[in-house]
Amino acid sequence: MALLNDLINLDLTYSTKKIIAEYIWIGGSGMDIRSKARTLPIPVTDPKKLPKWNYDGSSTGQAPGEDSEVILYPQAIFRDPFRRGDNILVICDAYTPAGEPIPTNKRHAAAKIFSNPAVEKEVPWYGLEQEYTLLQKNANWPLGWPQGGFPGPQGPYYCGIGADKAFGRDIVDAHYKACLYAGINISGINGEVMPGQWEFQVGPTVGIASGDELWCARYILERITEIAGVVVSFDPKPIPGDWNGAGAHTNYSTKSMREDGGYEIIKKAIEKLASRHKEHIAAYGEGNERRLTGKHETADINTFKWGVANRGASIRVGRDTEKDGKGYFEDRRPASNMDPYVVTSMIAETTILL
Image (cartoon, rainbow, N blue to C red; front, side):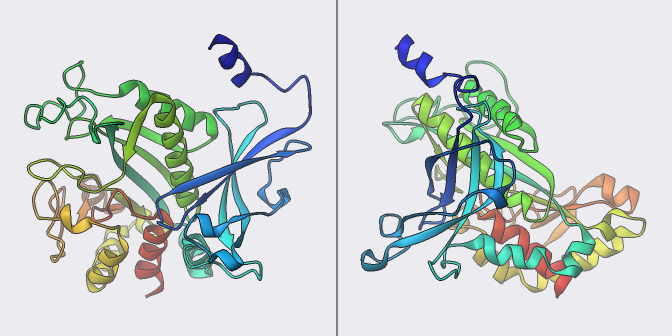
């Protein structure tokens, strides 16, 4: 095993100029991250200089067997924390050979919204809070929970420390550092309310970069849990009953909101979000009705309400924003399995373009 680890960790810098690029894309379910690697002759730092590639879409639920070729367009580059050196991770989106985005390519539509001059002028900032649950591989049961049983009730686990409160911290810390190495703007981590559940935050990021960075962070997390022999779940309600669900709270502001008088702009934006509540809920993740029950720090899925410092609201405005008269707000409705391209662009579209 020592020899295998030595080979995995080989530093290629002094033996070749060639690098390995791991092309990453989203499969047919909208949450199954796929990747494959290719060798490039020299280091590359600009995605526009990377070659397009293809894959078998019939094996990912994205193309029929008789016409299965799907084309990958490189869109964003990150440093590879697994291979290191000049090797890279490449976030891609997917197109037909004719150059049309395939139906599961949500990045393409989001990029159109973010490239709108009215949106670009507002420089939309996002802070994405990704909650997730670590599961025992063979039991499909949260890490640290008794096999087929339950731990003590919620209370001591949120931001808790100790072997009886925090389960999987080595995985969480490894992910934190790997994201920083990759160049992802990860801003923090914490243990969540349900034991075995954790959260990391990405941001502030601008526009389409928020989706690229969150997807790359999810990929890195999946790879680390693969190594650890643990399963990561983005299900919004992994355990039924009196346990918190998992969300992806989305913090948002525009240039106008961050300037003096911004609080009035925020209130107008919230009114717009209220008018499209059903449309947003429909796009905010599968199974979200199991999470948004009006309990466990959520608003009921059929009710839109906002409030200052209210974690039981659809939209929460922070005390500092109210006090300063400017700042940001938090959309608490997105589920942990939401597509960040969809959620971020939809918030920008509703609050800026409508």
